[in-house]
Structures are given as C-alpha cells and as structure tokens.
Length: 442
Image 1 (spheres, rainbow, N blue to C red):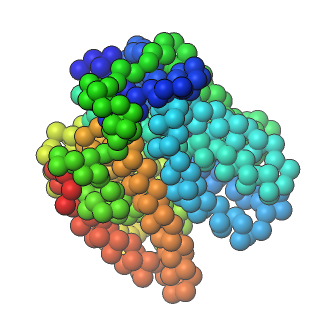
Image 2: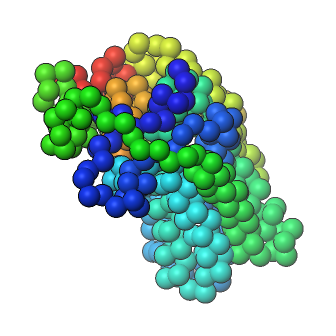
C-alpha cells in the first residue's frame, strides 16, 4: 500500500477545514506529502535509539552524580520511579498534540526536547535543575513513545511487524548500549560524569534533524474532506474525529475490555522489565557472583532482546491471536525466576538468557497497539491509554521488590512476588492477544 494514500488525513483521522480558519491554522491541520520510505525508516530507528539512554546512561554514574550534586538518598531512590511517572503523565498529551500538529512534527519536537534535556542535565549545578532537565528529556521520550506505533500504522500499514521490529530493536540497542559504554566514555573524557551522560544528547540532535527534514521536505496540502463530511457540513466533520463502532456508537476506551487488557498487559510487562533493570545485578551479587560478572550477565539479559526484537513482532503480526506467543515468552520469565530462586549462581547465564527472552514481550505489546485499532486515529488513542495506564501500573513493582528484600533479608519472597506478576501477565496477554479491535466493543 502506498505511502501517498496514508499520508493524507482521512475523514476518520482529522477534521475538515472549518470556515474562517487562518492560513496558519490551516497549515497545521494538514499533513505532509509522502517522502522517501527509507528516510522515514531511518527516522524511526534514530528516534527509538534515543528513547532509553536518558534512563540507562544515568544508572552506572548515579553514585558520582549524587556526590557532586549533594543528592539525598531519597531523591536518588525516586529517580528510579520518575521515568515511568513521566511516561504516564506526559504521554497523555500525545493524542491532542498529534491531532493539532501531526505525529511527524510532535516526534521532531520530542527529539529536540530529549537533546535539550540531556544537554542541560549535564550542566546542572544542583538537584533541582538536574530533575527539571531530566523531566524535559523524559517528556520528549513520553510523547515519542506513544507516537511510534502511530507512525508505523500511518506510513507502513502493510509492514507493521517488520517496522515495529526495526524500532524496538533500535530501542533495545540504545538501552543496552548506553548502559554498557557510558562509564568507559566518561573515563575517556577525563572521568567526567557530565560528559559521560551529556554525550547522549548528540544522537538526539541527529534524530531531531532527520525528523525536521521529513517535516520540511513534505509539502503541506489541505486534506480532502470525505464526501459525507462535505455534504453534511462542519457538524459531521467534527463527528468523524471520534472513533465509532459499526453501529455508529462512539468508542469509549474506559469501557473497552480490549483496551483495558492491553493496558494491564503493558503495565505488567513494564513492571517485569523495570524490576530486572533495577534489581537483577544485585540478585546475582547477593548470590556470590562477582560484580563484574553480574554486570555482564545484566548486559546479556538486556542485549538479547536486540536481535529478538526484530523477529518477534513480525511473528506476532502473522498470528491471529498473540496469546500463545506471549505465554511462551512469559514462561521463559517464570523459568528464569525459578532458576534465580533454586540455583542463582550455578545457572546464572541460563537465567539471564531466559529473562532476556521474556523481555521481548515489550515489542509484542507495541505491535499489538497497531493491531487492535482499525485507524491511525484509533491507534494514537489506544497507544496513549495503554502506555500511560500501563506505566502507572508499573510504578510500585520495583519499590515493592526492594521493600520485600530489605524486610526479609533474602530474595525468596521478592522472587515469589515477581513470579505472581508474571503469571498475571500471561492472563492479561491472552486477553489482549485476542483477534479483536477496540471499535468492536465488548
């Protein structure tokens, strides 16, 4: 299917021009004409590459940051929850911004916010500026997070699996790469934590430049109103901006079982991912694994999803129901947790690999966002609802694991808690993976 067909606003995705609208407003209500598919693909990959370094680059240098800025332990602990909170809060604004300015312009602005936030964070002279600049970068990440599935749905409707695989692979590469090389980069640049985390603003600048190029190269053209909207007038045009079921009733996501199943699944898989990112190295170290080896095992768990993220979404989109695939992935997570409980030291490499496979539930969740709605407008609303609600669901998980470990002095009860959440993830995945659309109702 051609990009030209999907680059124009349909009656379902945007309102028809209203009388008296100024030229500027009219321009903002239009979309760009098609640009080279390879440029859009490069833009997707670069944007995804910048969606995690703001988080994963900080963890290895957090001790140096705290010492230099005089950051309290409480504030440092809150930093682990700030990303998910920002993703939930700022992600809600993505649908309105996309409707007003278009997803390409919003992603370009999001990448610019990431670059500015990371640059300012490296110059921060106090905790307040550090947190504010971090929030700026995370706001840019949040809106871009929401709109990645929308970009894929609109411009690559017949390649949802492969393009989702492309950007989730780039996302995983950015997360693993930033965690692995930030310390060596900081050491090479004079043992400066500021340069170590500030250097990640450069890829964001490159991504913003590519998306700005996409925006500029596209020629703004007025959207052609649908025949029904043109005949019925502005009232009908406004009505077409809402999602409707086949019987004409509007879709309310808060009453959609499919939307809630996706949100719960997204939240549970995000909880598992944040727990692994926050606690896996410590679990290995407490089992007697040397610190250096624990770091390598963590890199294996994170890095394994890089190649698999390109394959798994393509497999998911070829299946009518994704529940069986999600059950297999979650079962790998359950096996990994069982191994950490029974023989954390002896089978460490196998447990890290199994948990890395389980983390591939994330790209499947992103692919399902494009499969569970019939239009780009539906995808943007579903993406915002599922991701924002999901990230809110994921907030307490890592904190509960830490409290259980501190209270009991072992990892047995935390691992039981993690296994329980993984079992619930299987249930949510089966429900979310059914061959249904949010427009179909209950």
